Image 1: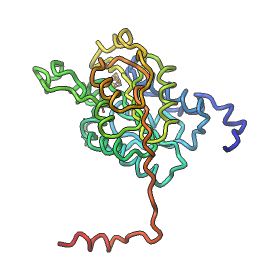
Image 2: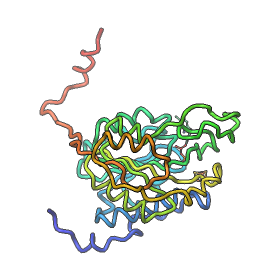
Image 3: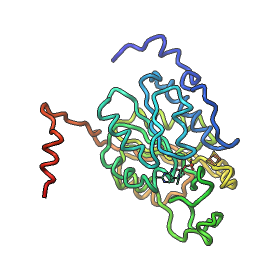
Image 4: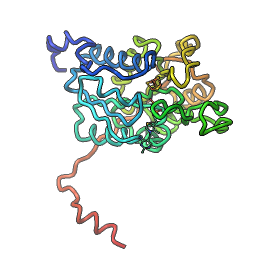
Length: 280
Ligand SMILES: Cc1ncc(C[n+]2csc(CCOP(=O)(O)OP(=O)(O)O)c2C)c(N)n1
Ligand code: SF4
């Protein structure tokens, strides 16, 4: 074990905040998630210069700009592959991926499944507001079928929502949890556990979009700590997640898969060799 330096002991949430002021709407749940991340990292004594936060596009994806860590605000739906490449080549870094339900489950949906399956050691935090906030309120994969406040879906989408926690489990995620932006301390605890658990950790944070879904302000009345502790059994977890009402908070599943680690070969394949393999 490496010795903890005095500097690390003294780390505070403010050491993780950048000087850029968030442009989110007043009351947006993403403020609570930003606060939770800046509480979780010093609690784990992970210095800012060893953290990289990778995101796609959306209101929630702005988070890397507000943190005093390494960051990458990339392309819509492509945060997970970028983060995968980074973690594989720099396993010493603590890699967090942040974004919204649109970014992660629509355009990035296949990357989500493949990242769960690949099980690289990183933490994916999705601020789920069941809407595309940045592009002014269209339905997302987690939107209820009868929500008809967007002109794009006049009578609602009329299709079943996507259940990210169930998909994460079925795809092989090694840690599955839910938190609420209305309780940043609780969310910080869950995020700390996610970072500490080996492999791909997925944290859904219920994070209201107060502008396009003002009714979500009431989520704080509905959320509650999950009545039972995290299970380590996938079959129990499947039953639990399939019958969940979306308001149980805490760590719900902890798996024991070994994280993916790249094997670097001494003589890497050249581009020319790869080209030859694809010649018809
Ligand atoms: C390739 C591509 N397609 C579409 C967009 C437009 N776009 C920007 S953000 C966004 C959705 C954002 O929703 P979400 O990820 O849920 O984040 P939120 O803004 O709600 O935090 C879309 C569709 C884009 N930037 N790039
Ligand atoms: S539009 Fe919604 S998600 Fe975006 S900053 Fe405003 S409240 Fe937050």
